[in-house]
Image (cartoon, rainbow, N blue to C red):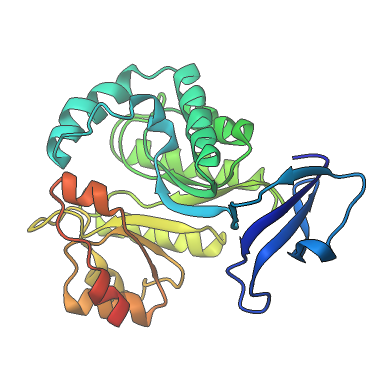
Length: 296
């Protein structure tokens, strides 16, 4: 966002204990960077565009830690479906029919929808592409939207472009992930991360390689974890712990069926948990474990 903007007259909730809040506050933004936060009478800028926020609340941009931007064009199709109905009726039918242009448009729309709702940073779990062209399109869509994002490239052993299902598909994805990571810089608004292959769908030895790869390349890494009751799918936390692979900062998504021991392992390793309560309840994944996680 180029130019100067002065948001003034609103209640500034800084969410920063060193700053505090300002009932009649102002925020000065220049070329997309916050330059000043404080009382309205203390912040003046004659050449800025003034935005009157009187009777409003000014807050930092929100962060969404689990968004599938590439599926934005299908939003609403599975609104009343359980997880398995959604996977079979929407996800697995839509994915093969998605063109490269569809993917880029959907990703861009997802980023714009986030910005329009006050979300300025997202972790995009990118697991809907089936070729390198689709993966690049999703990445480019995020960049075009202007949202700050972690583009978490999803691993798996599905077919990938001309690479067949199985080890070749998995290797092709990892090679492409490495190539995309090498082309980004720390200052880029959209950063490349990794989403692990769905635990329980590939040999654990490959999960070990993925986790080590993320660690060695400094990638934000996430996984759907313990989202399906009484199933090995998405359930591998104790296996990771037994192999010394509980990485600090790893983002565990859903976590509706964690055991007490699994919660302890996440807490001890300084992992993070992303919860999507409405989706988890509606899709039958279970109850979001807020209290257990908070106590840990």
